[in-house]
Amino acid sequence: MNIIISNSSSTPLYEQITQAIKQAIFSNELKEEEMLPSVRWLANELKISFLTVKKAYDELEQEGFIKTVQGKGSFVAPKNLELLREEKLKEIQGYVEKIKEVATIADISSEDVKEIFKIIFEEEK
Amino acid sequence: MNIIISNSSSTPLYEQITQAIKQAIFSNELKEEEMLPSVRWLANELKISFLTVKKAYDELEQEGFIKTVQGKGSFVAPKNLELLREEKLKEIQGYVEKIKEVATIADISSEDVKEIFKIIFEEEK
DNA sequence: CAACTGTTATGCATATAATATAACAGTATA
DNA sequence: TATACTGTTATATTATATGCATAACAGTTG
Image (cartoon, rainbow over all chains, first blue to last red; front, side, top):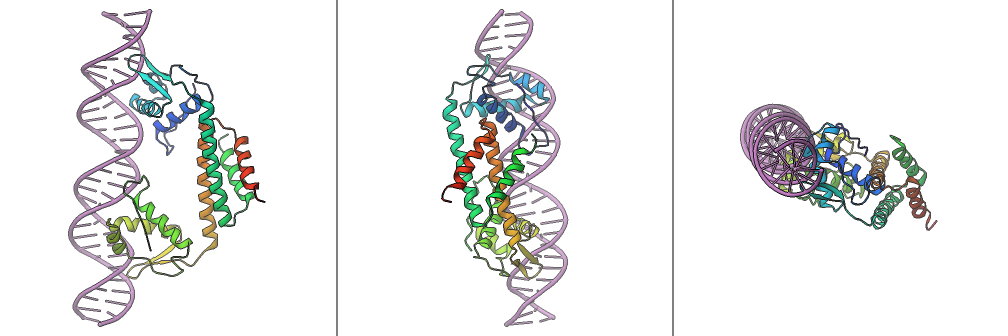
């Protein structure tokens, strides 16, 4: 697994970790039932406290993405990824609808919105 | 003016206030050159510290929405259409950033997002 | 038993948010 | 000019979130 975190980011370290692991699960880089890196190992790898990693894992477990067993480790929970992806698509659709609403009211062209879209999606690529 | 704030919200009180006042300015509930409630009056009304209200007003002045004169009060700045447009562009930018976050985590391609974008923006045209 | 897993408890450091209190300064007007 | 409004500034305190270090404890496996 390849996790990159940034101390200077405004998003907390543990959030960056949960996001990276969620992404790995969605992309199937981490498969069902597969074991995650141990909290201490990952902490050492990222040069941060294991408590920060544990906080991330706790959040992932809370949301049902992983299962943790004391003494054994943390494992990717069985999931219906297709269903989850559908949910996320709907979430995105909702945002786009809001954008259209705002753009219409403020008389902002779809070209301008496309420009914003381009800038944000193409940065750091 | 009708400002409702929530202590349990994750957005800071002063941000809630700036947002509410911006909205009041956009909707013309607060007109050009109109005086805003005094920091102490509004603080009393909302049962919060006047320092929190002042922080909100400072932010609004920083962004050019209001002008403050010591001894007199705070007043809605002469309307600036460019400012309004900038504000709305920022709002849209915020939504696009959220979309990028969700798409990244859920392994949704920018092509898929573009498709959603097309569908929503081209319907009823 | 040894070497891994995760768990828990304390304490410390920093930043942000919000508060209370007090004193100070400008403006308008009775 | 007194006073009653405006905003301003300074200091101290509290709470919460984030992150770290250290230590001890507990379960699993070879």
